[in-house]
Length: 316
Image (cartoon, rainbow, N blue to C red; front, side):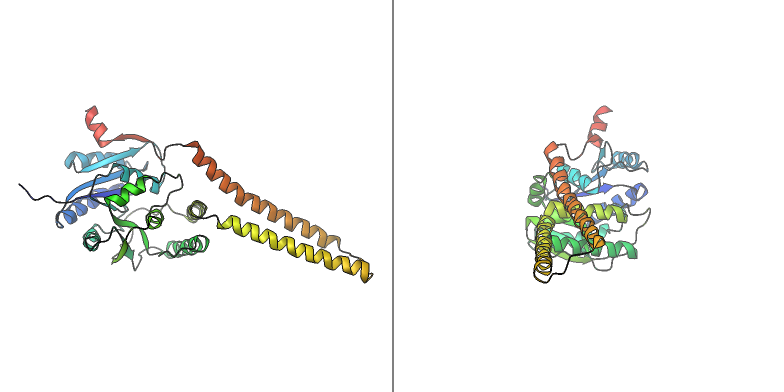
């Protein structure tokens, strides 16, 4: 009877890097076979605009271990990761990006560390090969996130990781619309480690995370993980009300006991506009939370699939 090897699933969201896929899959296969382990590669096409699905079908035709999931439209990177994890059947599941900044050869180091008894191992990009803007916006994101959630995050850690199957099964139970893979995994509390890895410069294309999208991602992550903005809003409103009361008391004393009339149309109008702006700002914060609750209450699916490589095989 032949030796049984563990099955490692590699889950990869695909967007904007279709020409990298052949090199990516080749390097993943070489790395996994050297461990040794059985392998499946799950490529999730997140409506990539560069005919990535045709490349995925071609790769599947050459090697049945390479599987594909084609989204009906663009749902976002973390929804694509979720779909890949839903389809993964491995004993260990690797999540990585498709642009070859995550080096496939580092999977061996992640797996070796996991075998020491860890349930999750993240890749620690000690020297990130990103531009100045992306490095610093990422660092700022985690600082703001840590402040609002009371956690301590590492900005050098992203999606590149390996997780034991029970971790992925637990992840599948989390069906919120606002998704951020590494934060979800860290929240679950499984035994986690990290290993330093080499990080490559982007081979092609450019990141889809511009400053606007990063701000949206940060807002969604904070609102989904913390209610601290609401508490701060309440505290600030209380302090403002207290200050207004004390100032009103001061004016009362001046008018009735010191015979000093209160003047200042400008100061009154400025105060009204200032307080009105704060009220609308706080309504905005409350509205964002209500909007997220509304989105969750709809119960819509996290993603919609046009086809998979398996369904494509059946049609043939």
